[in-house]
Image (cartoon, rainbow, N blue to C red; front, side, top):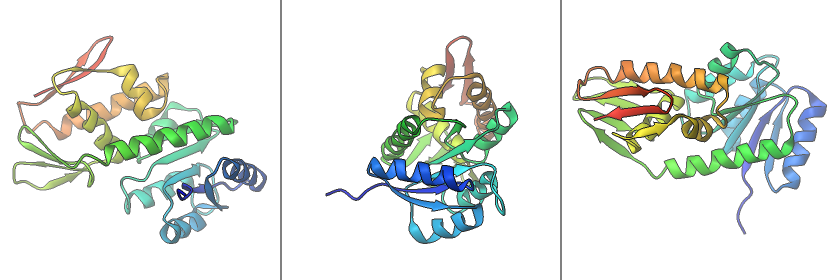
Amino acid sequence: MNKPIKILLAEDEAALGQIIKESLETRGFEVILCENGEVALKKYQTETPEILVLDVMMPKKDGFTLAKDIRNIDGAIPIIFLTAKSQTQDVVEGFSIGGNDYLKKPFSIEELIVRINNLLNRTKEQKQSDIINISQYIFNFPKQTLQFKNEEVVSLTHREAHLLFHLIKNKNKVLDRSLILNKLWGNDDFFSARSMDVFITKLRKKLKKDTNLEILNVRGYGYKLIC
């Protein structure tokens, strides 16, 4: 019998947290419920969850700060933010610090479960990759690092690493914008598209030492990594 997937849920609204916990447990998940970010960080360190579901607005330590702390320890664990915020800058910030997905309150448990399963499947698929040579760079996907020749190793954010992985996987081909937004961001809405543009700009800067590499914007379609 397979062990249930362990989810760490950080939600300071006690009633909502209990509803989410019980709903997920009836679907076969194991849920560790924490009432604030400080407790969640301690539970993360002792309980080894497989995915994190974090409310953004929490006392003592908010969801974004908690995610930053965890990303300093683990660059791979999937993170979903629960948020009442809808401003573009808030969504972009969540992705920038290593979030994989977000859900705006109110949301359905069914949608949360779909997003959890999608992230777990994606993580399983990408763990199969190891070190990739791309022109004069060495890309270590599991460690989320990039190195040009024998120079200093540069750290990538969780989001940068996953986007670069898919660009390399489809090198010299157009990476469909809508497809990659749905795969990595969970949807292709305006907020996600703006966020992806930010990460493409960051990757261009980190790859600029190699003139044989270029990320092109194929207007109306997506991006292409030329190698």
